[in-house]
Figure 1 (spheres, rainbow, N blue to C red):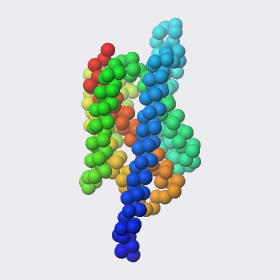
Figure 2 (figure 1 turned 30 degrees about the vertical axis):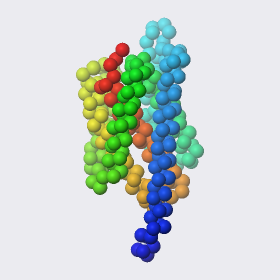
Figure 3 (figure 1 turned 90 degrees about the horizontal axis):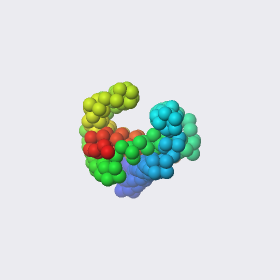
Figure 4 (figure 1 turned 180 degrees about the horizontal axis):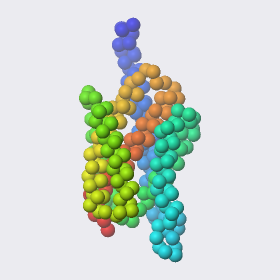
Length: 239
């Protein structure tokens, strides 16, 4: 039995399965990033943001914008808690809807930063994200304890960010961004280590494997976006 498991044929199949799994993970991640970026850019450039989310009488942000801002949170909690129950098609539709809603909520970055700042920060984010993803995949150190602590920190800075939406404190915003860079890069490494375990597991097959790939893409996408926003606040000079 041992000889069969370690045979070159079995190893090549495992390598092919792992490669296919991560190809799907990154395909889902890049699909969501593309949707979010296109939606944000189109809403900013076409004027839809002002038409839908700005009160023409007062000039202030309408309540609908806050509905759009917080609806992705409710949607991602639904996806994470019920993904076993959803079919792959329905899960994919919810994933696309999440990317669209997040794109709509991020439209404001096109008003606060120049295209050059957005492009530069995106490249920096891609480099940092890629380095931590590689570290998480290749390291033999168990990152589970670190990941649990970072996840709690993630919840903490998320709550702080919501509070600061109403306080408008710039020093607090910078502190959140600085902590966020460390939290999101660390969580990227942890998530990659978890995905590697899923990818190499012989017990996860069929539709369940496809769902895990989509969920992995979702988590990496969320981490990438949050890392990008943290770095953008630190590196971008507001107009």
